[in-house]
Picture 1 (cartoon, rainbow over the protein chains, first blue to last red):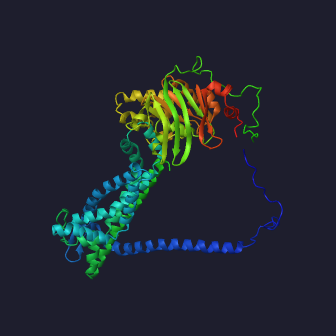
Picture 2: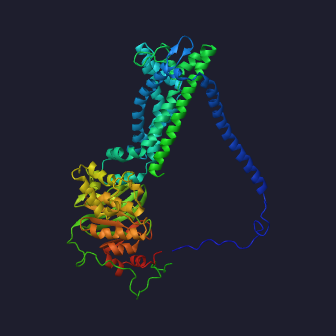
Length: 309
Length: 290
């Protein structure tokens, strides 16, 4: 049944002389030069990217660190440009936490739908994925305006709640896509194993799939939260009217101070002490995001190790 | 290499006995016949994946408390066949089955059949060990818990692990991760997991192909004891394994013309290995395939 393989030609001139010394021959010199250029070009670009980050971090740390002391994070602002930033810190925490409470469950469930319940050729899933990608690219100022029309205009008041909703919209596609990515990492063989035991899919999701993906999902959540915490445009549009010197934790019907807004308004003051405060606030925000990213990475590495990937 | 009439030119009368050992502890008795209860009665089963035909009109009966082996070369539809018995192929895009798969008289592929219920009765163990990333205990206890078999769960777990010949090796570390076990132990854990819910049929899709000979021997020994309680269908690449463990053997191969998986011969294992009716079966079991 097997066919004879095609003949290998044994005559004709050889492409190179196999007995020549092993130095570059033919166009190898030119190819090596091109290789060098590409190599250095790529390395250089990567270094520029890292350098940018380093410069920004250095700038913030060197200017922000002098403003930092315990009072800075445990006291409310005093006067025009004095005191701490506690109210903004707490405000950001509350706004982001409430937004996360909305976005995380919806995002995780969306990820579950895409990987566990929609079939591999589902058109609905395709449309949802497309929508999520477009949502991710949505300018956040547009999200802010949308929420302004949705909540602020009917209620006649800017509020932390509106900011939470806007941030939830920012977080949702990040959360859904991140959940989807890690759920796809859960080996299909586990789903098969569970199916073959005659267990319903939702029990499999709760008992096998979600526990395997917890680390990855937590990572996605942290990254989404870190992203939302630094988001300024929507907060500016829907939550910029508040008392800047008092703590306001009730997000319903009240403007709530936040760190991005604090940075924006204090830099607008054009007072040297205010600049220092702005840098200090920026430093706190940057540290939060940095730590969140590191935590996310650690969690992800752990969960990968658990899955044996 | 075929003669003009399409018959393999190598076919000749063999004078020496076939080299395969035939299991001595095979279910005894006269020819296994229609008097036994058929668990599966498969009629004209054909399977398509999209427009590609993977398996063509297969008809056979699988009998209760016997080990039925499915052998054949790669790509001949062995896995497709066994996975069609408990509807594991449903999730494959484009899967279409025609004909009838009757399980205790009930068609598995008619509307109204709940495939979760089908799999609850017809368990499956896969080629690659696939324990859950949980403890040894939880791997076995998970399905019973979810199926409402919560009473005396510890005893159930121990029984399943004993039946899978794993108990002595793991009884002191039931809370350890299942992933810390060796490949052979993981596969026996998967068998324990499957029998913990006491199914009716156990489908094994090349359960020993990723294991070393020692682990393989353990799994084969298991089959001899498990068949007293379960009906077993095992897919295997390894003909010696089929000869050692199976009472009945089905030989699948690719159809000469259409290159579609086809059931060539199905009979008592002894007949398949000692006096096959079809020259293709003879070529395959004597190692003269291709």
